[in-house]
Image (cartoon, rainbow, N blue to C red; front, side, top):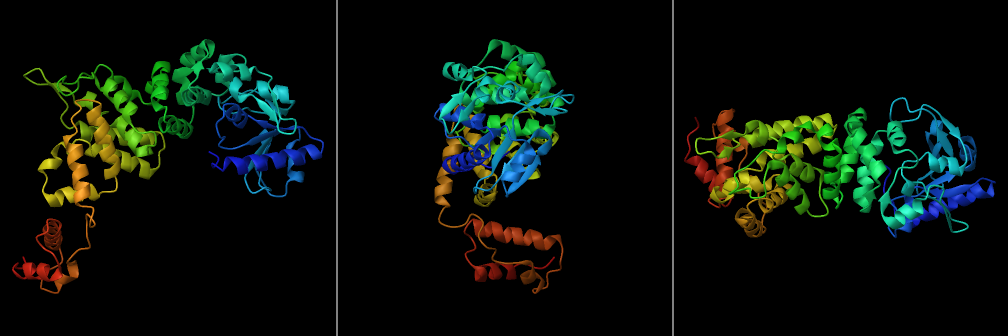
Length: 444
């Protein structure tokens, strides 16, 4: 993904790039998403320029540049302080790998527009004449809130299967309806999304689920069959019934969907994927006891292992995987927080993933029985413990014990943990008290 820049600075840099190209006799237009977003009154994340100048000519005109995709006619120019992607008008050859064209032919602006994915992304804007150039009826679709493939939807998707996920992302992000013919192609080809590299699938999923309109994206992924194609384990969540006294909302799938709808607009990757995967271990652990009640013993532990495999398969970073797995593993611990000793509670709350775990717990409760007593308890404890670090500097260390005839080994670790427990519970206030306490112990 390209970095996000200040829209005003990016627009000015793109304008200067276009002007330099025009002064040299080339056509130069703003292209794609920036045109769409300006027409919708949304600040573009970045600006792209499309031009009749071939790559070699672009390179001669701009001193500071990165030749990122010369075979596709793409050069990133940096002469104006902000990276601007400059691409030569082109048509695409055969997409034999279902992702990128085997070859390109440099072409006209109209031909370039018609090889793009969706009409709302096929618009150009002439920044000199202040004129929108529309070869694909994209303005009408923008006005009507419709996401429509350019030309034959099936052909567009066969060219690049990633457009399946992009259709979902754009429809959710923009709040648009997908044109029926385009939607039919998405459904027809949905299962083929797995032909796209895991890295690109992950990138689109993150964009969908970290967006405030994530629920719309989730529903489109589900309806198209892509959700189960990418994460087959989701199929078993449907119809996996739960005890109605705790889950009046219904099965595990409905519970997960409801939790997703309750998240705040801004979420981290571990939080949103923790929500998606927190109960993934329920179907394989479901049993019905002698009273007829469904139980899911160990689903948190089983789910953590499943979540790790799923996220590894999608090539998430190690940090994102570890933090998400911790959310899944710990989500059932919250039912016990009011019974924890102070030291255990402080250690629990001091972990790096606790803030996201707490947010997950809140929507877990709101998406089921609605009881927030443990949430309220933990908020009170956060206030109570706020005056000092949850885990203060240790009063003693291993050297203190060795100097007092303790032999290196596991026993030293146990004693230091006991000292920390007493410290966390306020029973040992300073080093002198800790040493006095230690003097009463005999080295084992």
